[in-house]
Image (tube, rainbow, N blue to C red; front, side):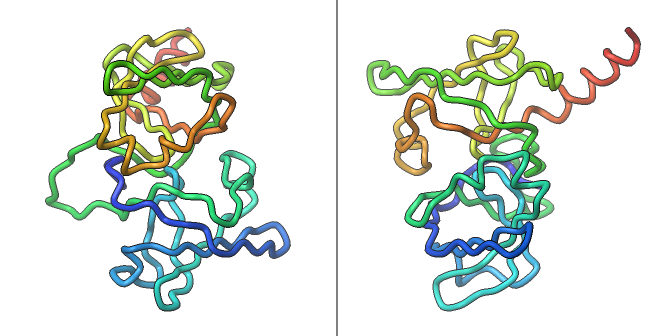
Length: 196
């Protein structure tokens, strides 16, 4: 379980394919605090630490993860948003994030707005995922408040701190992003669909 509050930007230093899996090695300032078997969210994808070596650690993405996220598009040198799992009893500064990406979306527009930025993302609404105005959504692991919620798109406003401390500053029009929709909204959507 995560909160969507990013702790560090990690840098991909090695990618290794192994049958249907992808091993990713990441350099990070939090590596010294990690341990084997620990869960870490990478752009919102919960992956298990399988190896630690000096200031780098390795995680493995399986076929299911490769098919449902943008992780197979990462390259050496790319920056990824990192968050360790929350501790029981800690403050929940973002919202409840499972680290299970629902689908990949696309960055449609980025507009600077007098010291902040407004990003608009589109997604395939045939999966049944929805957003609501002022609800929560997770984009590349970042907990955000939805604005301009539509059937297959939504926007978020990014403050300078988030812009500087996440990989939002690296997104461009057309960038693929990982989306995790609010878990409560997913349950309500499923119950509502079942009644129809």
